[in-house]
Length: 160
Image (cartoon, rainbow, N blue to C red; front, side, top):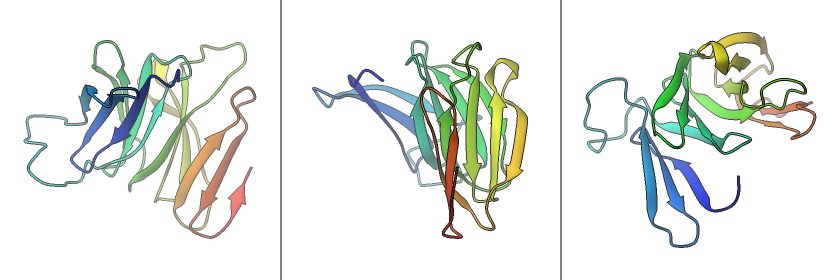
């Protein structure tokens, strides 16, 4: 959020953060739900999307296992994991909500054609979901100050 760090997902189920100036790795967050050698081979936890929270204190990640995870930047701990989609999560996006905690709403979209809105305060419970496209939802974006959500799908349609 402040251009000091860059976050990216890996095919081995981790989120990595690098210093943008020195290119040195600062942190690694694991999407593993248990003991597993994440360096062995690509698996069903491939991180498809990574997004810093609006205030920079959290990182959200969507994975090919259909789960959405949120990590605390300072502690590296996973603060939320929820199975939101029946197929890969293609994108995650923090939503601005006037009058609410700016760290509380997160949208996800997936190959199952759904867009879901999660309440982070209640361990990622889905508070809204809808079938947005006739095929996979490939990406979502939100206007920073309004929370207006847009999506694009494999059906060739962009929706706002």
